[in-house]
Length: 300
Image (cartoon, rainbow, N blue to C red; front, side, top):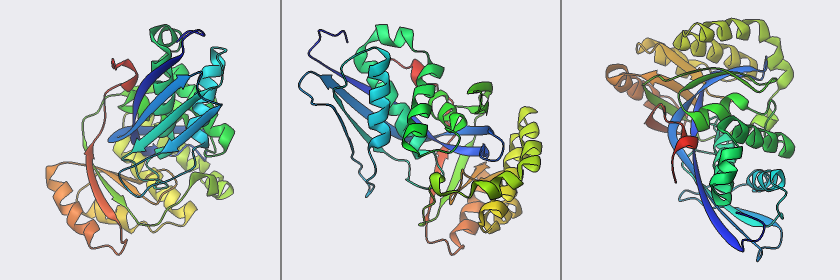
């Protein structure tokens, strides 16, 4: 969209994600995309007075629109365009559950804004640039501690990613096909409320998990990560122990909780579903696949 164009619409899509290594302890993280989607629609034009946003879902979700509004603002500022527009998201990703709803919303909003601006804008902003805009927006509005660059990369690029969040560096990306079973308790836990000091105490052992991830031992890495963060953040590790009893090799607390994610196959998924259903978590079980498709390269 050039400065003389009166209006334009754009669309974006990004996935939720699950944790392999939570980056809060060391600023180094790893995550994988999950086929739970957030969709964004952006409208730009001279008729708008400033920037506004809305979160509209088929579920009962509602939330703060500052993040998606900030994403729209940052993209427009990058092209020295008037700060006028409207952004709306709808999401399948449960809020406050450790499944990267903020990263998905930010990515979708950024992609939708770039889509509204047209091919010239997309040619100037690569996938990692788009991710960094969303990360900056998350830091600006205070919904993230590290910027969650790892989660954002998994959300937009798909596959398993390993990152250095302090350097905003994508260290590695691996495509791995797997089913994912997710335990989502009814309670919520927002990243901004996390006890960072307790998380930093476990940094030496989180580094060991990170080294396992670098060696492509993702199941071992996420399981070690899960036990470490359950201890630091006072979550009951029983869902993880149940998963191991069912033969699952990779299971973790996702993000800062309260959800747990497990990489499963047909046999152990059935057993784990039964085991998790017996827990008194008063939540829900979701089955999806790891998303391996880069959402930034898709024509809209």
